[in-house]
Image (cartoon, rainbow over all chains, first blue to last red):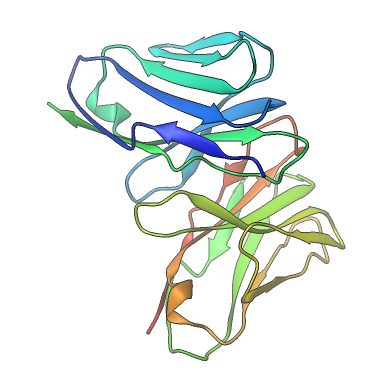
Length: 110
Length: 113
């Protein structure tokens, strides 16, 4: 079945530093979604990527979908304390059921 | 619009007891999902539904049952609760399975002692 690896598991950064999380799949994907979960909260949908090589931006967040549609990344520029939380990818392929990556937990030193 | 609502927010069960977790949505979405999230872990799909009267198993269905008699409601039934079912349970909806994100409820925190 489809395997997904999300790295790193944790990242602790100084406020103002950049942050990147990566999601790697063993199979070619139809699309990939990204979610953010604040501590004690529920996952919130951020974005969906569909096209090979696609890049989308939301303010300080940049999302990329690999050319081979097997990997994706989320990059945050100049982190703020409001970025604290766990970021999950959810890759989708027609061959597998819905899965979520294990998440990257971001903590920030003010 | 309330979006996705879940009840109860918290519950403590004794081993062997049963309960139903309620999930209601007013978004008119066909797809609904139940996930569990163990502490510090990701989300595991328990069951999902593509519309009223249609349900299917996810990754971790054992010990759970679901039904979908209406578009709005998707209850999750736990029979013979076990400590391994201690978790946070999230219900989610989406307009489709391939396109469009999932919208999550606030969750139910369940402890089985």
